[in-house]
Length: 58
Image (cartoon, rainbow, N blue to C red; front, side):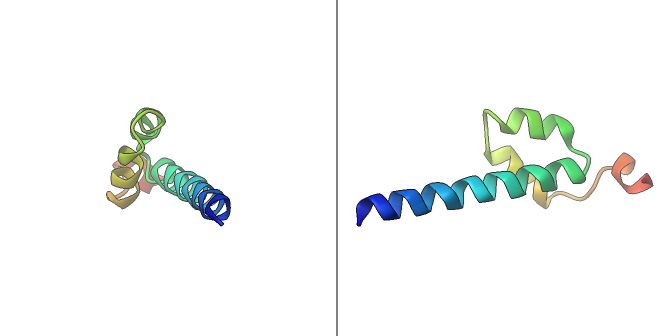
């Protein structure tokens, strides 16, 4: 049973990391995306921030 919980938690973590990383890139915060590889908390911040001025032009 614990293996299933660990496996499910790992899948959930990877899904959230992928989703938040893509949201960070779409908002135009590329530097936060690259630093987020080492500090995943930055992906949460970057996903919740407003889009940068360059991201809004496209």
